[in-house]
Length: 298
Ligand SMILES: Nc1ncnc2c1ncn2[C@@H]1O[C@H](COP(=O)(O)OP(=O)(O)OP(=O)(O)O)[C@@H](O)[C@H]1O
Image (tube, helix red, strand yellow):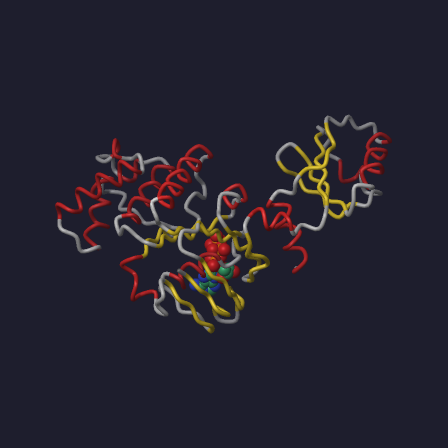
């Protein structure tokens, strides 16, 4: 469905995408995962034909020029521009008319898609008056007016509340089950978990590409989860052989070479009179994996 061969994109002297190669198969939900500025938007814009690579080659649905297959591609850009002074239905009709369909076809399809994206009850509401989550659903609906074979979504849930994000992903799963291949970028590791395969992007390079389970298997360290209310843990554990400490919600993830470090950690905590609710080995999260991979290449 997609191949990228040694793709580089420079903006002046800045290399935004650096010698990237990957392929995406039909039926996948492929995630491009990385922090702000990693190069996600640039890659999606090259794959949708909006930007040309500086060097390297690519194919999308078998075509070297994505422009030539654009009727089969859907694209929800990161900054989707809705017509705020038009209603939901009017916005959708605009996108339908760009696909060269008759008015009747557009109305039938729009009703079906607005129903699918659960915004049909709001079809007469001005886009400006939609909540953030509903705006994203409208963006998804607009992208679907193409009935795409391959659907690109650039950080579609950034800034959307957790419930709407879950709702949004349910729709992506359903679309995927119905045969649409999905290529989605996200900075969220919980969304990365939902993809069939992900490419971790860091400073324009792919640092690893595999299924979430495969990436976890490559993790070379152990992670101990420490639950405590104390917020000076880094200080107390300074003498211990820790590779890294990161906060995850209310807990700390302590990265260690091997479990022998646990004994030292426990005695350092006891010496500092720290009440520990829990200290146990856990499976590394994708965020643990990403942090380790990113620091290897930094
Ligand atoms: N038109 C441009 N001109 C110059 N630099 C650019 C341009 N577009 C992007 N960049 C730079 O290229 C790098 C990659 O940007 P890109 O938008 O692709 O990353 P991203 O992973 O999508 O991040 P974000 O979520 O912040 O958009 C960044 O350093 C960005 O500042």
